[in-house]
Length: 239
Ligand code: ADP
Ligand code: MG
Image (cartoon, rainbow, N blue to C red; front, top):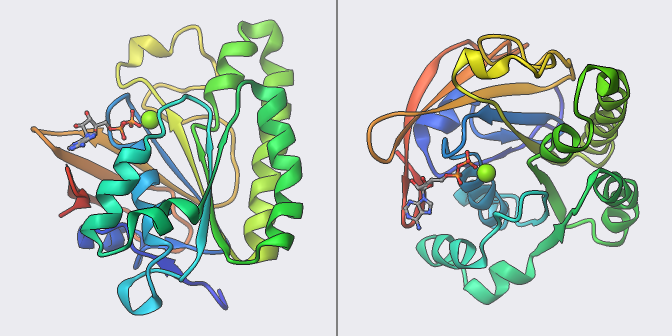
């Protein structure tokens, strides 16, 4: 796996689980229940990618595609300050895009190549979450095949971007923690495993006590399976 670089999550434990951090040339999926910390991790990485390599970054920029309207500049500001990054420059190094529906999300995906060609400093593309619009718009079994086909095409386009432009791609996927909630959504199997298969790394995040969270590596091709604990603080993701 030549030329793979890593972006720190600001948690040594989570970085350890990931084999050193979020990898370039790969898509990393964080899946888990509401409030498990997926969006906070995305915010943290969009700040940390800006750090110099000696501090765990890539001196790069981020693209943040927000499908749920949960992106908060105040969180970027707080996380940047905690890292010693000027908040204004941190914000100017994030291309924020709000995707309002699947067609819009796919159109943004189609335009990414052009944006990255214009600004090669982009080192991470984040889609938070990649599934919510698809789930909302394609309801019921009769729409499942077309939903999966469109979602898979979108995901594979993101994977190709990661490989061709040697950047990190992060997607999130909200999955209910209660198995009985899975009925009615046949793309989600009991146990929290979605049925689509894309290349890359899958990490499950779960709530624990207070601000503690558990991250679990799932089916990683080159990383050991395991679980670690991290925390969500005012300053961001921490051990
Ligand atoms: P998900 O995206 O998985 O639904 P989030 O990443 O939005 O979950 O995590 C939400 C949690 O992050 C909140 O429940 C809270 O515990 C924590 N959080 C959010 N903002 C802050 C903050 N400013 N200070 C400390 N913790 C925060
Ligand atoms: Mg979220």
